[in-house]
Length: 285
Ligand SMILES: C[S@@+](CC[C@H](N)C(=O)[O-])C[C@H]1O[C@@H](n2cnc3c(N)ncnc32)[C@H](O)[C@@H]1O
Image (tube, helix red, strand yellow):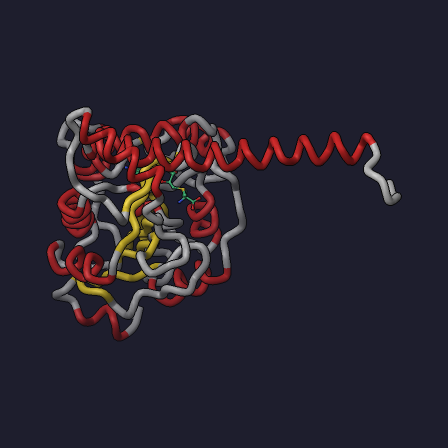
């Protein structure tokens, strides 16, 4: 350790470098907020979907973090018992899939970032190859994913985990996607996790972001104020849900929420959607 009453050259250099680094950090945060506002104001929903998928794809593999305790508890409480057939969307590099297969489930998984899919399939720890495709592809008759899944018999449960529905822009798009999933799994639960508007991480309306939105308007973009939306270079688009939106999503797509949203789980609040007409699901698995 360097000690003394006068500033030595090492201290002077370090203080100067750290000040510079602090200024760069501030600049980078402001530039990020500005770009977020600009992109939200200029890009349509399909472009936001593409931007998000390519942000993930650039990384090559999704970090294989362990399954968290809240996920283990949630799956055990709300998924039908193994060996049920599960559909896992936005499966990343297969973190949840590997866990669910270990529990004895038969898992069909899909993921749009092709490098994640390659990575998951190359490690060959999954019982069945992961399919490549996005939530939008579920609705596209010409997509390979849609064709493959339509040829399967019904699933017993669906997992859209680790915040992935937060990446889907537009309530109409989300409702259409949930309706399609309801057809693929007519009697089973749909487990989804997401960012929640009253959580700590909802996007603040910074001045830089507002400036980005203003520039977008000048350039002919929409005048909407997407206060519950954000964009980052590493994760792409994200939406922070309100309770009302979740209720509406359920009601409009033939589901109902099983319980209150579990808002305290970190990092993702989550909820279980049950088919609205099948009350037997609540009485046992
Ligand atoms: C936070 S990662 C979670 C990955 C995985 N579920 C896990 O827990 O390890 C979010 C995933 O959502 C995927 N994703 C983003 N936009 C999507 C979309 N429109 N349709 C389907 N998946 C999407 C990303 O490619 C990424 O793999």
